[in-house]
Amino acid sequence: MTSPLYSASVPVLKQMLRALSDVLKKAEEHATQKNIDPNALLQARLFPDMFPLLRQVQIAADFSKGIASRLAGAEVPSWPDTEVNFADLQTLIAKALAHMDALKAEQFDASESREIVLRPGTPKEKKLTASTYLLNYGLPQFFFHVTTAYAILRHNGVEIGKRDYMGSY
Image 1 (tube, helix red, strand yellow):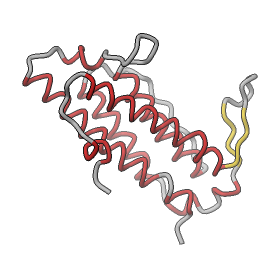
Image 2: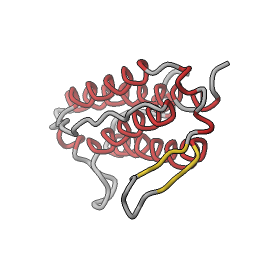
Image 3: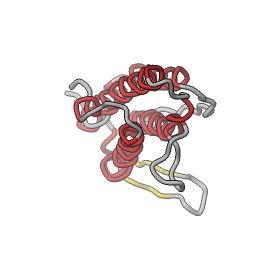
């Protein structure tokens, strides 16, 4: 039997990352068709104190690999945030998807009893049960950044809708 935390994490994260990849393809096509500098979209923000699209995608990818790794009891890989264009973001999403594909569902079997420690050894250290980490921290953070990326593109005229956001399930 597959772990409930695996079922509630990896398939959901992969679905949304694949949808984000498709939305980014539409954004790049939109920029080409409308003769818009791609950086106008990549650096677009919903508000000046928010991260731009590029960073929203990086953070979504970071959360996907972090959530899956922690729940599987695996080391969270550290990837530098060096992406600067749509192709780089597609590569990052593909890398995050491949990382999750490399994790075995069986690694999540004991995840319900795992303790997840965020920011260990710092004044902001927080200890959570795996289910609390996933449901109250990890997934909300991930969805915030995926949704914000979508909203930035929609706000900037990319013709995307709810089906694009949801992707295939």
